[in-house]
View (cartoon, rainbow, N blue to C red):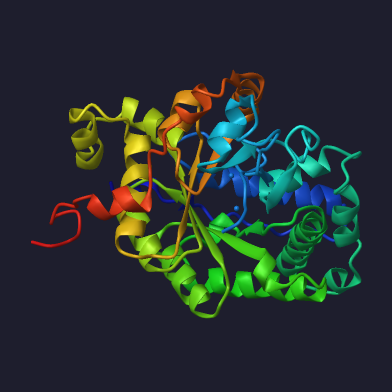
Length: 367
């Protein structure tokens, strides 16, 4: 499966706005245009080393779920699986904070759009402060002015989130830059400076970048500077291996979306070989990527996203992070495991099993 096949397609729309356009409307319009100009093969529903999470639809605040200790007389399935992987809720703007307290968060264009439509959210003031920024108003170029407003909004919201979660905050990099390595790096540097102005240390930050060739190269260069990256939209082993070789801090694979794509396409050798073995393409890619990372000593943490049901989650136990829908988390939380049952949960992925995994020569680029 090629990177370009699953990469982000950019149409580069004009973003010029007149001075008469209300800033909040401009921001919302810009986000809408960004989403329209970015094509993904599957619908975006869901997008954090010790933390992360998913989007507004695709990555939102992450949590470590824990209701009770796994060593107590009775425990929930949520407690049991949390002993193997960090469980991440696919949720909306901390709307289930009390049920599933987040330990990390992600700031995305979808999140900002949601905040603009929810005046009562705790993050609305962060956006309003960005839209009132005098520095942005002072820029004569309309595109530069709008970019300034958006950057400030991202960072203001991310800074507020950093006060609420103990872990890291992942900030989305504009997907329209997906094929420009230097533009991605400039954008990350701009965001990092704004975070520094808000007294958020770089150790608390990740920057979420599409896994095009250019995006992976940008991640490699940023990681060499000590800036942590979060590579997303990984749909092939070639992308996953390249991301690990680049030293990305977090690599995100969408299990359910890859499964959906495979159901309607039959001309991809990587997927066909998996299906011939009777395996699920999404689960198989996570397994292979995990084994590659651990067998060859890469530092990357692996995040499995777009998990659709409990069986998906059980099949991935041991991966660093699992993003699960609230209905799955609620079902796990409501299901009590007896003392005998709680030990029947099996770690499917481990460094020990990865060390024994055998890669074919063609998978490793050897002939």
